[in-house]
Image: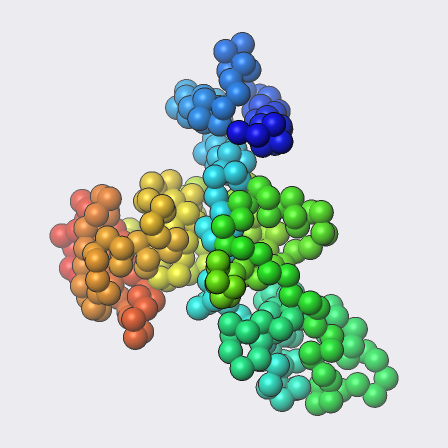
Length: 295
């Protein structure tokens, strides 16, 4: 580890110790002397098992630990589910796409969704529409778009967070080593890795996830494994796949048919819906409930 990397690691560890103190956790002299992430992570698990603080607090600290361990590709919104604006649409259609979107920033593409030529901010669009003689029908959305910022998918979340703060930016387009667009990442995506977005550990409030009356979980295939693990306190592996559909394909070594089911990691996965080669919906239940009828 270089001196610069060591300095960053010590800074992160100092933040973690400060957060532990803020939560009222008493740190022993041995814990205060720990310098590696592995040591502090182990200490954190012990404190949690002892019941000194709640799951939400543990998740926030885990998020701080993992900023160095995770890459942008682990939290990005994949291009297959990315909402974007077509620069070649009629101006009024492009305007409506932006204004009806739940997002304040949207990538702008031309010819292909992988050819991102800009980023449209709803505030800039509204400001342009307020100009004299400008109507949705004659607005040139390309002119109000901001220049896209491309970042490698291998960038660590810690480095990307620093870059967002340094540039005072909120939105970046993620590309692979060949420059191909993989998805988008926002400042909010990274912050949620630290603070989380689950109000209660028993309430599932992730987009694309629904708990059924029988106790099973219906999940869109694009839902990140990490989000499920955090919300449900599961431990599904995310080293080889980012989404839950990717995990099923990786473990089954094939692209399953609808109604096909698999059991691994203590869960029963049933494919509810498939579109072409994409698994779009799954039902997950503990193995103990696997005897319940399939879909």
